[in-house]
Amino acid sequence: MTSIDAWILMSLVYRDLDDKDYTNALLLSERLYAIDKTNPDYKYSYGLCLFYSLDYTAAYSVLDHPPNVQCAYLFAKSCYELGKRERDERKRTVWEDGVDALKAGFMSLQDTDTLQWGQEFKSITLRQPLPSVASMYALLGDLYVSLENIQAAAIYYLKCLRLNPYKLSVHMKLCDIAHDASLDIVRIQEVYEGFKSQPLDMSCTDTQEPPPPSPEIIDFSLNTVVVPEGDLMPPLTPFTDISVKQLRSVVFRSTMIKDERESEIERGGIEVFKDEVLHSSEEDISIMKRKEAYSNKHGLHQKPSDQIPQKMTIELYQDSEEELTEAIPPRVGTKREKKGKQRSSKRHKPDETSTFHSEKSASPSFPSEEDYHDIRVSMARILHILQVIGSGYMYQTLYECRKSVLELQKLDNRQYDTPTVLCIIGKDYYDTGDHLSAYAFYRHAFFIAPWYCDGVPLYSTCLWYLGKEKELNVLAFKMRHNVSHQFEAYVAGGNWGKLSQDPQATKYFEKAVEVDPSKAYGHYLVGYEEWEKGHYLRAKEHYVTCMRVGKRSYLGWFGMATAHLRMEEYQQAKTLLDIAIEMNPIHPVMLATMAEVLYHLGEYESAYEFITKSLVMRQEDSHKRLKVKIEECLQKAQSQ
Image 1 (cartoon, rainbow, N blue to C red):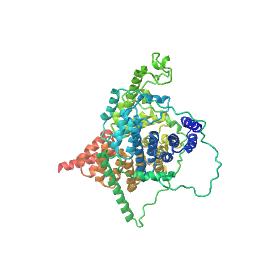
Image 2: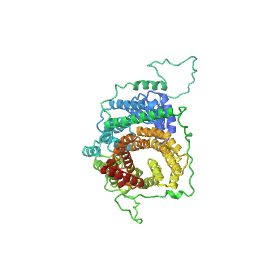
Image 3: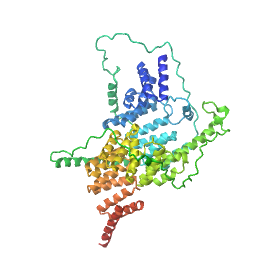
Image 4: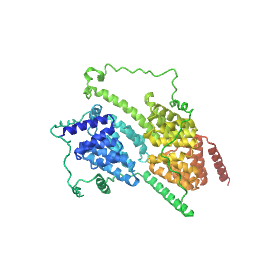
């Protein structure tokens, strides 16, 4: 039975969580947790407050050995977030702890193959006591992606979508790994079609109300007992309560047992091949380091760069405010609306015949069986919108950019004019080397939603390519105080520094990597800076990190290839370019670079094919000159 003290505390904690007052909720939940550290409800509320406070290390420690499904799910979420911030040697241990906790949680569930939509629809008015099975599958997929087991991740992402295809974020994650998991869009679309054809389970589980608190039980009182002298520390045996630090050491020992882990899902051949190329690149860097140390009289490398700045100092140009005016990108394949014609701002009145607005359904309780048809129709409409966005994102991750852009045209203006959709289209254009079109979509996305910063790194890079110094200055100035997106802020600052010839530009990119080393684009930018300076060993080190962090992004592989090209290591460059172009076969610069490599290898016919494809996509004077040189070599070969 719960005490009145605990009942009041728990009510206050959840009220503060609803109000997003995480600081006060954490203080109160700590008092609650102190009452009974073994109580699952107290442990969960305390861990939840720590998680919302972004203290993932603390949540990981408190929720260790989770007693129920709720705690297991929250513990696994903490493991996932903590692993992204831990040291390299600790990452895998933490992520494997999360996998073990989730699998233990699945064992306690009676049904993991169906989803009770009646229970899901209760979420509008009631707090759900258990995590949904679909969310658990999604989290398990996230953990397996972190562990680089892409085949297992794809299996659990598909399981999640079969239960709940409204998980658009899971659809996008599945698209991101589709190449390495050997998935195509047909396989993913089958999930939606299967859901549409199956009956909808509108049942729900009757949750038992917690027992009323007992006013007779008191958990708080002033302690007037004098502590006796002597050491009261209990012996550190396996049967006594120990400190959090000691509990963490127990976790380390338990996670070293590898034989009990699931091993029937093997990694794919594409992943293994990428690992082999990565290992070869790392060996090459190690050899270069030894040669550099040997050739140096004192065995020292070049003097390290100055200390990375801890703060970004960007001053706003006085005449720059006008640079951030709205620039609306046009729809693809559609006409612009006339300036005089505007969308009506009037809201549609509710249909008087709708059961949701009739007197008999005015109650906020769960809809009756008579509303089943309307619910089903509405779900289908929403699902169609998500399916279009998911398909567009899928095409974008496969670098089928035209299909992606055209798929997203199916959205109405309200859904189209959202930052997520605009940034997908912006990246479509960026990946084809069309920085001007990409800039238009990224700029409009930032204009309508400046809090949405996912597109800022590529947006700022487009501004750098286009030489828009004033607008880039405004963007960097506005981003510098965004503490929730410091990585994006430092990338924008670095691009602005490059354009304004600020010597601190490279330091900003290095700071971006320091803030969030899990994002491959930051490593690529630092590598590019070193490559421009002719420091190819340093460039390779950053590029190989980019390849390791973002195996499914072409940038790291392409960057490493350019370093080998500058060092006249053409065969290694060709191997890396093969992987990069296999990922993204429509980037004109990469195609031209491959043509240059093949030219140096004497493979003139293949080089001519690549340079021709590149020039069809984009006309560049340097690429035209390369084509002329290749044609001359072909003519000489034919005359012999």
